[in-house]
Amino acid sequence: MKLAVEHGLYLAELAGRQNPTLRDGVWELLMEAADTLKRQPNRERGWLTASSRVHWPEMVREFDAGHQRQAAGGPRLLPASAAAIDRMDEVLLWLVHAAGAKPQRDIGVLFGLACGVKVAFLRERYGCARRTVYDIRDRGLARLCSWLAKEFAPHISLSEIPSRHSDRSPGR
Image (cartoon, rainbow, N blue to C red; front, side, top):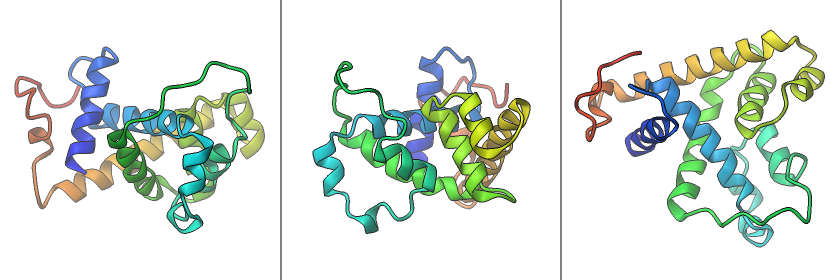
């Protein structure tokens, strides 16, 4: 878990964020998980048994089934690395901690936005306003970051996670 969060902070820095927060790192990990899922060849998807995908939220399973996949004939994406696949699986396990009062909607909106699903599609699907979609994302990220902070608390200080960036100040 620590390595995944550290990698997320690294991705946030690569994306141009100065002094990235845990929220920035988690968002980058969600987007990487979505990208990794896109890069899984159909043959490798077949190796994943139903029991190995059971912890995936419904939106993830639908995305994997091809509802949001790019059209055939587009450029082929390079396959994902083994490390990216491991991080994807771990991050998808975290998603249950992002759910609020309406878990299916909350996780669907959060992961849908990370996948690049258009806000208009999410508004239609879940029957909410544009601003609500972003509020759901923000609350989901806050719940996820709160859970991660509690998970790290007994083991390590969050300020110690980016060990190769010791000059980073906490917060924004």
